[in-house]
Amino acid sequence: MRPVISKYLLSSALLLLVLSAQAQDDKKEYDSLRKIQMPTGIRIGTDLIAIGKTLFDNPLAGWEINADVDFGRYYLALDYGSWSRKDSLENGYYENDGRYLRVGVDINFLLKDPDRNMVFLGFRYGRSNFTEQLSYETTLNDFGTIQTEASNPNARAGWVEMTTGLRVKIWKPIWMGFTGRMKFMASVKNNTELDTYDIPGFGKTYKGVYWGFNYQIFYRIPFKKDK
Image (cartoon, rainbow, N blue to C red):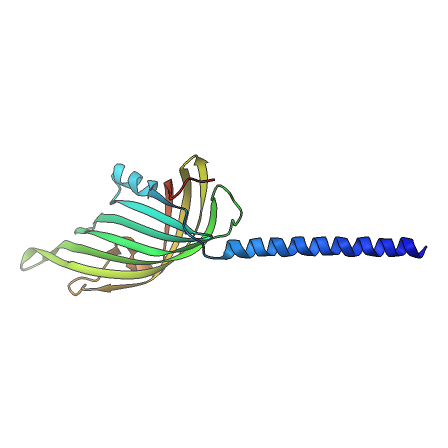
């Protein structure tokens, strides 16, 4: 009886050793995936929503270029775009025009996906340089109609974003996906003549927290041939 028990205990011990070693290997592999690694490629894309708004005569017009580079599960992300708005008022109009840049990092939570699909959280810091102008008419009993204009020709702004979204490989080097943005902490400089109404790349300032959404298509350029 004792030899049988001893054999059983020995087999159990060996099994535990194998499982423990496998668990250690899995943990090492998982930990290695969490580390910053050498980049393997760059994805360059654009926002299809911005193009659609421009084509269909929306008050907001512009374009946006997006790019990201992988460092393991961490992606250095950059957005650059153009933004112009013209809103009609009851007695005039407001318009602006500018360029903006966002830089930040996305963290991918799909660690073992060979297609480099992404479900991510991230952050951005945004900067914008723009001009804006307000023109309106005021009617006074004794003086008739007076045309008034105010402008900020060299306005600058900065803000912070929290981002989330996904990227999905749809065919060879092509990915599609979306990015949701919570924009906040906007600050504006050089707006002495006019309280800024809309910041290119951010949105309307009076909302405090502004929500944005991009639907994007990307083309990936590998730094070396993928295995």
